[in-house]
Structures are given as C-alpha cells and as structure tokens.
Length: 381
Length: 252
Image 1 (spheres, helix red, strand yellow):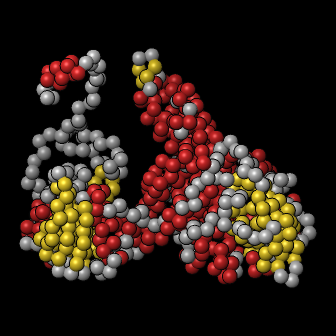
Image 2 (cartoon, each protein chain N blue to C red; image 1 turned 90 degrees about the vertical axis):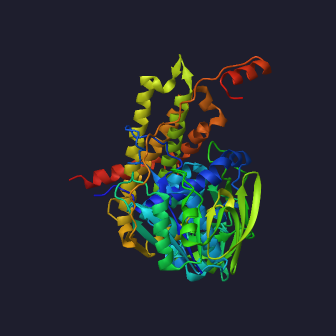
Image 3 (cartoon, rainbow over the protein chains, first blue to last red; image 1 turned 120 degrees about the vertical axis):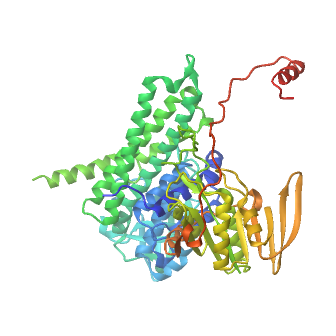
C-alpha cells in the first residue's frame, strides 16, 4: 500500500494550484459580483488539458484517471470552488460524449469542448424531478428529420451561457429505460432560458432553467443509443461526486490556510489568538477532519478507477463525508475570523456560501446515505 | 542548433525558510523543492526559440543530488526534449559551487555541442550569480547576462540587458552564454498531456566523476542566521522628529 502521490500527480496538483492562484483567485470575487466567469478564461484552461481531463487520449483528452482528477479539482478549488465546479460539469459532459458519442458527435462537440473553445452544460434535473431523476418529463419526439424536444430543465449551471447542452430526455416509456441523451446547441430554435437564478453560492456561474419548446435537433445529435440515456447519466455520477467532494476539500484547505495566517496576526487580550488553547484545539480538529476527508476521497477515487464492486458506495460515502467536513471547516474558519469572517473582503463567507450546495447536488447527501444503507442492509448475512 | 539549459533544484520560493539549528545552512530536509525560478525562465526561452524554428533541440541539465531529476522532469514537461542529470552529491544540504558547476557544464557543452546556453542569472538559494559568467570564461564564449530580451539571428544575438539605471542592448557573437533575468518572459504552465509525456522523455544519468570534476567545496560557511525579526515601530509627531530619529539610528 502506497499513499504517496506519484511525481506526475504532484506536478499536476502544483500546476493546477499555481494556475488557480495566478488566474482565478485574484478574480474570484469580481466574477462573483458580475455573476459570470469570463469566457476568455476557458481556452486558457483548455490549453492546460483541463477540458477533457478523463477523456481518452484517442479523442484528444488527457486520459487521466479519476484520482488524478480529484487532485485537479482540489487544487483549482483552493482558488474558487464555483469555477472549479463549473469545470467539473463540463468534464462530466465531455466524458459522456467521449464514452458514448459517435465519431460525428465527437468531431462536432467534443473536440471544441476539449480545447474549451466551447463549454458544455449538463441537463438532467427538472423542476419536478431532482433526486428521482428517472421521473424526468422532457420529451423528445422522433420525426423524419430528428427529434423535437419539449420540456424544462431546472438548476442548470451555465444555462444561457454554455455553447451546448447535454440533455437527458424521454424518447420512450416512463421510467429509466425510456430516457435518451442528446446534444442541443446554443441558438437552436425553440431553446430558451429562464431568468437568472439568485443563488446563495456559486454565484459566478450563471444558473437558469433551460426550456425546450418544440426544439428541433438533427437525429445525429443523439448520444449513443436510444433508451440508454439514464444509464449514461448514472455512469458519470460517481465521478461527479468525487469531483464535487474535491471542490469542498480544496476550499476547506484554502480556508484553513487563511485562518492559520489570520490567527497569528489577530490579537485579543494582549496576545495573538492562536495562543488560546481552545482555539488551537479547533485548529487541530479541523486538520484531523481535513486529512481524514482527503484520504477517504482518494480511496473512493482509487476504487472507482479500479472498478471495484463497492466503488459506488464509497463514492457516496466520500461525497457525504467530505462535503460535510468541508462545510463544517469553512464555517469554523469564518467563526475564527470573528466579525471579519462575515465580511466579504476576507473571502471566507464566500466559501461558506459556495460549499453549501455541495451537500445538495450530484445527489443530495440524503440520497448518498440511502445508497450506503441500502448496500449495508443487502450485504447483511 | 541545440540549446542547453542548466537548471537547479532549490528550496521553493513559497516555503518558509528555516535555518538549521547548528547554523550550517538552511534546513532542506522535508522541504518542498522546485526549479530555480530564473531557470524556469531560461527553459521557457529555449522552448520559444525551438517553437520559432531557431533551435532544434532543448537539452536541460541539472547538477546536484539524485532528486534533481524531479526538476528535470518539470523542464521536460514544459517542453524540453531531453535531460541530463549529473549526480554530484548525496546530501541535499551539499551545494555544488558555481566553479564546479561551470566546469561540469563545460564538459557537457563539449559533449553535446550546443550553439547556445541559456541559464538563470542566479539561483534563489545562495544568489551567487556566477555560474553563467564562469562558464563563459571557461569556454571562451561570448556572454550576455541579465537578459530581458533575446533575439538570436544566425551568428549573432542581440540581447537587452537589465543594468543599473536602465537597459543596455548588446550584440554578441554566437556561440554564447545568456543568463535570464526576471522579465525575459513568463514561463508557461506545463499542460496535463505534457506532464504525462515528460516521463517518457530521455533522462541520462551521469556523475561528476564521469567528467573528472572535483566538486569538493572551496568555500566555508561560517554562519547562517535568520534575518532579525521585525521590531515594533514608533509614531513620530513631525518631520523634524522623524529626521532626528533617523539620524539617531544612523539611517540618514
């Protein structure tokens, strides 16, 4: 058993962190205020290979594994979880196109997505179908020319911003087996967007409803086979959970680093506040939780890479643990900053807001616990 | 034309530097090490020359402990073609002095036949600022130090040098040694595919003995101390008082 990162993994982490510190961190607050991540950023990120992190090398991706990817998201999230998480969604779409798309789909949508000349959004959730995603109602009706989509997708990161949407829609009967995956390009007639959602965190990512009203797409925009869409969507989830956990981890690490610094500078009762044992113990508790979260996340990623039978369960457990630890730590870091932590200038309150949604999306932590307990009970002898 | 770039493994510029308890130097055990930032600039410049079609091959060389191969991999990930590691020490605390480095580099130059050597102007660990100049003297090649611009054109190179009080532009004959200053370029980030490719690029291992160079230190470190901690300031009421205080401490 070897817990050390390889030389390449260290180089990847360092590169992602350095890039984030130079290009993302100084702008994170401004982008949040503007409610948008400037599109010019993405080709820079694409040039580093982050547009197709686990897309196969044959398709022009970096061909890395999921453990490598967690390092990238952890490192980038140290600068801004909102930007890192947006990249995670893009990569989830890219991976779907690579794994299941035709050569034609790859040429039209994947290649520009890898260079990040285009960005992709993932459309699964609907206003009435969240955790029970298989109940989705957006319908794609087959015609001679292709499909006509009608329905609404909710909470779409990049809605009205992205260049193409990877959409799970119903081509058949009710239930998971009637679902297919299609790509809808921005600008397609019948594609429109709801108003900008006013969110607690992730504010630099524009989030809108994505609406289809007799939105006609060519048949060649079908990804893989009809009726397989739900399976494709589920395949991406375990990895998505790892990524989002890594985003919590990186942000928590960044908050702890900032807090360590701050506690050495801030004085109360004649000494710096890092001299109070009660607060020292809180630092220790945060470090213990953070390290435990990191090792758990990497183990889950390793299991997913190995394809072990318990990978899904471990991804669910890691997602719950790491996102909850992450939220706890950034909240504690805010507390240790006192009143200043509540001010936007110190950058901590943003992390508290950004990380909150990690406990909700990519499967709520309640769903994660369902996955874990279901497995436990079924394994009972 | 081949371009040779010597790179040094140094303590990372972000790390808090601690002096060893015996005062013999800086504690380098279990400390993050990276490529000397000026060497990164030198590597970047060499890669740009290759991309511009003015160089065919970029060879990086590092002289020191075995772990310096990580530094070489970093350079390979940025885009250098191959690497040479010259093991000259076992102990991470043994610094190879500029003259020994220059002598080894001279031998490497003679073996590889580059038309240009681009080095960092100095290493951020001991700030010697000597290796490039010594190598130039040993080889009898032209030198262009503290370069903030480099334009290679056939048999000559035009170099803008950052000198006290301004910029100096010189034209030198090739082959030459150029040392990179901070503003020569902004080094790129190694992309994921290039990081993965780096481990497949050739990395030759040699020792200082292979080149017949004695790396025994000629300098003796008498003492290493931490900079004095910043002491509390005082408030002054007027310019006169400020000037008086400055005179008192001998600052003016």
